[in-house]
Picture (spheres, rainbow, N blue to C red):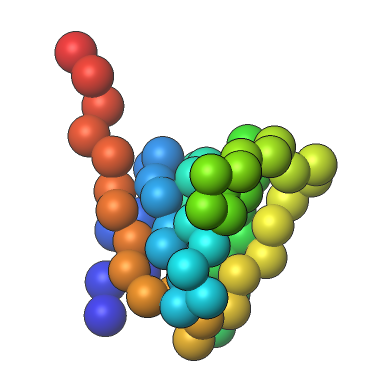
Length: 70
């Protein structure tokens, strides 16, 4: 699978739990994504995350790669 395609792009990572994370995937390390500048969206709630988030690829339902505006 082309995991490198989403590296260094602003994305929305939709998890199997129903939670979504918007941010920038800065690294793909083995089975993990490292996401910075992240906001966690859970239902109607959204909260900025401090530091980096590490997400196991096995918990990802799908990723939306956002198109730059311009």
